[in-house]
Every structure is written in C-alpha cells, then in structure tokens.
Image (cartoon, rainbow, N blue to C red; front, top):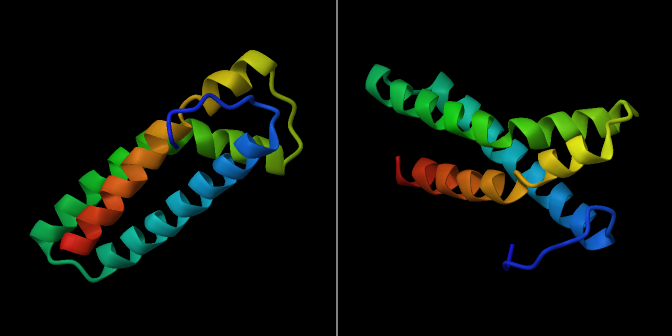
Length: 102
C-alpha cells in the first residue's frame, strides 16, 4: 500500500485486502507448480519461500476463510488479523521476484 491507514470497514480496505489475498494465492499456486518441477537444491529454496509466504499471510488467509464461511470474529481479532496485510503483500512481492529469478 502507499502508507495510508485504511479503516477496517472501508471499501478501500476491502479492495486492498482482496487484491493482496488474490495476489498471494496466485504466487502460492505458482510456487506449488514450481516445486513439482524443481531439482532437489531448488526444491529446498522453494520450500523456504513457501514457508515464509504461509507465515506472513496466515492471518490474512484465516480472516478470508472466516468471511467466506460467514464465521463471526471479534472486531479486535479482525483488526489484528487485518494489520498483517502489508506484511503479506511485501512477502508476496518478494516471493514473486524470487520465483522470477530462479
């Protein structure tokens, strides 16, 4: 994002959240296919990238799953989970760049 603070219930945040979520899913899918075709050494690198991506985006994915399943989460929990979006976005970008470089 550009450093602005977005309200959790704003349309801008929802758009941002959805964009980050979709980009992360796309990179995770690319990463999974790359693992299928990787040599042993490259496979280890891809696993490290995957672990970092999963860790950085875990809360964002959990929040998306809760929304998809219509599960109510407390406002504080949602807010805490939502604050991980920039980290997920940055890790997604680094992972994508690393995949392009392999």
